[in-house]
Image 1 (cartoon, rainbow, N blue to C red):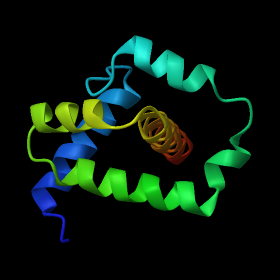
Image 2: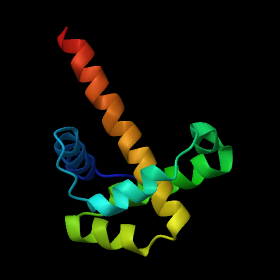
Image 3: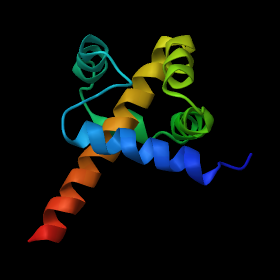
Image 4: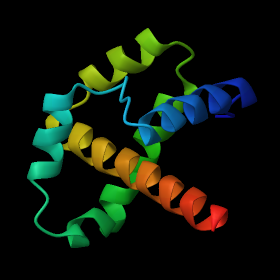
Length: 104
């Protein structure tokens, strides 16, 4: 599956908004629930889970509109959704750190 450049640009825009605290793909309650469950990140790096997260993120990026993305996220089983929220916020956090370190 090839991901169109436009889809990547849209995803980058969503990530940029999230870095500013505007999380349009996820409801605050969903974010809090997903991140509250995290006791330790070791499980996050399990190969099978990482593969699943990669597949879900690839599919998410491939969705063209905001509404398609949200509908896709809502269709996920609970564990997959929580893993995607965690992955998404790892990306946001790393982006913010990289941008902040670059400016200094």
